[in-house]
Image 1 (cartoon, rainbow, N blue to C red):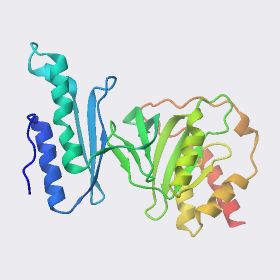
Image 2: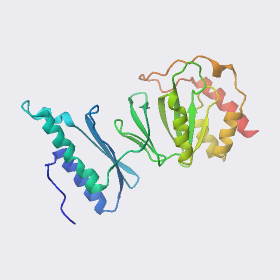
Image 3: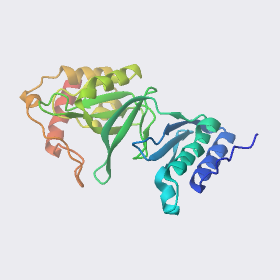
Image 4: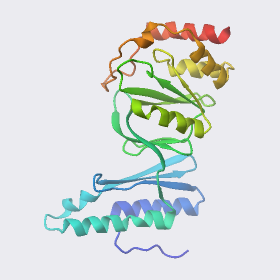
Length: 264
């Protein structure tokens, strides 16, 4: 194998990442590398290497050159930084993440990050800054889409085969049709909750009990909706210890309603 280009010199962090990519490629595990390059408005360069269903993350800031010395030519150092990272694209086929990109919130009650979320054309979802990657989903349920006055909505990516879900919150309402088109084009079932948010555990349970995503979607969208869907809804704000906008009693009531609908 030809030796890798080392000019300009690689930082220790980048060198370690490149060595890891080499090892993965030689072992036949490296599938692809997605990039989120730094720009004039974003100082951090990020990359995601997908290998055997696992994720290997990398990030570094072009402003790290300032930590070494106060006496540097900033423009020159930034150009060197950008040039050194070209090795990821040239040697390992790294490409910029392509798809629908929105500002949204991901995480849980203890760690919520609001940043750019990439909805990939392949059906996966990536948030580089949160180091979160969902390879694919079978269905997407859109929540809070009918709340009058709400400027955002939430969505959950559902995988019934392994009973997992992934939530993306506070997606701008003006991107609703973009997200719907993304899911449909990626071959997923995409449906809207007609009123209050429906717990993902209920939808996954229905799938586990033998329902299809089509029947679940029809049960939800065909259910009788109340005036609650026209009520004002406060925007969800990330806070510690608050993972849901609904109380347990409300979840139990919705579970009974949906299950009875699915059983009918």
